[in-house]
Image (cartoon, rainbow, N blue to C red; front, side, top):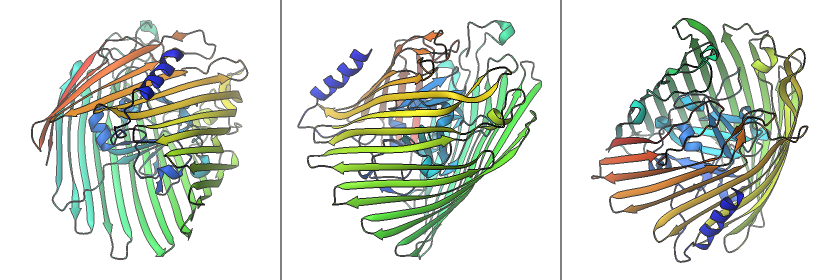
Length: 609
């Protein structure tokens, strides 16, 4: 597998035409001029040591993905495991760290379950997404808890730039009785802007689990899913430059699962927030943001009888101040407050807690070509006390489009409510998990290609594992993760090519075994081209084997899937698109006994005005 990965990268580099231009928008190495997540303020991406991948609305439509997990899979450093088809449990391992070591933000508001510490990626509606920024590496010095592996920030659909409303309609269907319909309108009215969208997605799905006895929950039927979503955003800019904006995102529905105790989960995922921005002086810009995220789940038995409820709420508030110390030096000072609470049929010893943090971040340009980012943060968590984290990044941009960069940082993750207080195995004496990370690399932007190569090393201490007598959560785990990430994007004879590779060794330092459910080898490739009114493209994802348990005795085999897509623009308003997924009908699992989609097809009609 490693020979295939390296060989593919070499061939892509050799085949690049020197007379062609770099790949078009949508390629990872052709990022927007500015990004937000890496510094919490708008910063040019080529001035940062931080590795990032950005997906725009254009990318989402070009790739014809129906869900957020489908968009994220194959992203450098991202390993996605799913327990069945649409709407089933989805865990994201970012650079080999745990699934609860990823911080998820929606328009700057922290999202996810208070009890599990993870976000329900499977429920976040992709029809309501404008952009996704994925920041890899430790980010606790800016965001606090959970950002050991990195941060994934989701930006909802935004207002338009035209007085005439922009209208987008889509409907489609495909295999497994899958259907989707969406409508969106956006525009501006004087100094105000607005966006409103609604969507319905559903599928009869596949049999999520097989190879398990009926007594343990196996139900040999198709496990369906439906999701109704709504997004609204509006804002206003005053004459003095002050801006006010508010947004609302809601997804609600149900998903059927193969579980011993329950057969259906009814869910509500909702995030709302408001932001005010003002310039107090020419060198001081202040941003105040408040919001709330809700993760509700009601479970029902196979008979339809109510079984359990886990409803969690997060209240968020942040205040950022951008200070222009000099044209080459910008200082950001900020503070965050979060209050978590639980309403559950399970009786927790504690049902709420707060976290408050303050940070400073300096972004500097030195001698025109050197860039420095330094951040420091202090957090106080009601459950375990204080924590201090920091990060330092350096970048040098040479002539001829070459760059070198390096960074070092530490991070932490506060124990979840389940780890602290769940009856029977919670441990109120847990300490936060802690990590240190170092990475370095090179990048190039040339007429013939854009490329990037990074290597990183991460150590994690005080990992929380469940063991011992009595069986309980304990801070006894240690992990070491070493990895290489490589990307290249180029255009060959009019074809846009993007190839990325991840090699990683995520191991338990005490047993020297691989961490469960992590893959060590990933290769993804995408190629596309336009022929007049026709667009065609193909993508490939190959992953090596993984183990489903910590003792490495349950092995899940390697696999490769290939997808084809095409679109036809009938006129300036109408477009048809079609996609064939897993065209070779590869049968594989990323979680033991849980099935993945075989060959499937989806067709849609789009109208834009």
